Image (cartoon, rainbow, N blue to C red; front, side, top):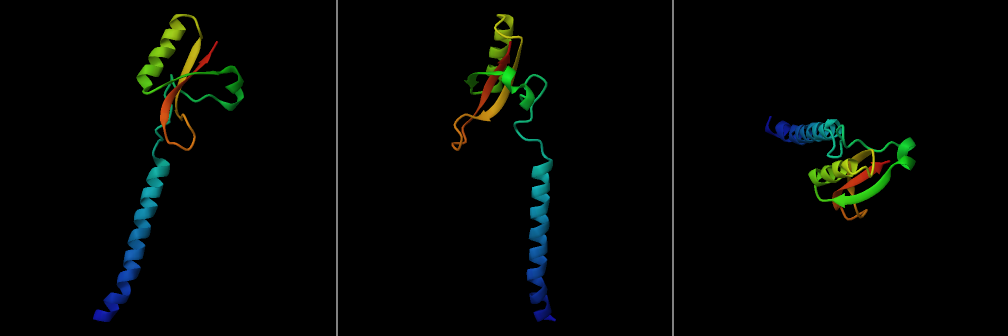
Length: 102
């Protein structure tokens, strides 16, 4: 009886690890990403990219939105978007990028 328990233990451990991995992978897929946009910071669509111009980079979303609103107020552009992007690809340095539309 004791040897039977030892034979089942690896199978139970493997099944448990598999379920834990599947649970965390599913949660990662189901969870919204940090880059999920809100109403004022929606991503620039592929078809409209030609109309949107990149602006400055900001350390936080609040600063980006403040600059976007100031540009609207000063009639520099009619719409803006703030998008959380990697500034230097491969270096994992994410900042907020302002895009504007005239």
